[in-house]
Length: 328
Image (cartoon, rainbow, N blue to C red):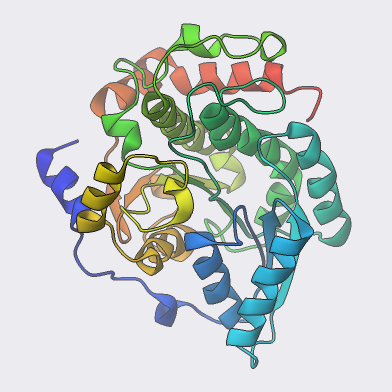
């Protein structure tokens, strides 16, 4: 990753792919985790405005209903549909019934955005199953969802245009600046069994960066495993945005500084829109990494080398598959 790319991710050029470039999405079904606020909420609004059926995940029925009500009120002419699934990515036991509910209602899923996440959670925060909160939410929870949704994605790929069925992993440039050097993953760290709780001693931002590197590796590994069945997997940095992802931050200094470089979340939604729909993304560049506000970029060199030379994507996938087999 070059200095030029790094600077351009902080101050990107104007978007080249917007909602005006979307065709009518009537008859298409999409799923967005964390669609009740931030860029997930904005992306949902865009898809709904194009008559899509959109499912969002929510931690409660109340927040799901509130988000849907606001979106419908903002676009009364849409012929789309909005539904919510109640789940907490920090509790794997809530994911299974939510996905089963979705599968009971739908036979097709055209794209899923693994958009939800946490950042700067207090040290010692853990998921219900004992994972460090960043890792458990950003990586493990979405991995379980991905496994449960793969059959419907594969079925959709058989009838949809080639390269149009996608799994979008929302990473960040935290994978570059904050994750452990070498592979982006501290393998000894994540080897902690969920039954014994998290034993790592790194700071919250290192754990966040490691989780974002995990998202990148899973996107690349998904592309490798399922590309021959017409599934596209990509990871992205949505941009430096003013969202509630920083809700755990207690540093007034970092918040004040952040205001100088943080962009409107609507621009981040365009990065995700590009990842889901741009025809510059497809099977020929499967596993791509996308940077703001919709451009092809590069991941950190050691992480890429680890994937190609040391099989780190497969290693991570296999670890997660074994740890979560009771849920998938």
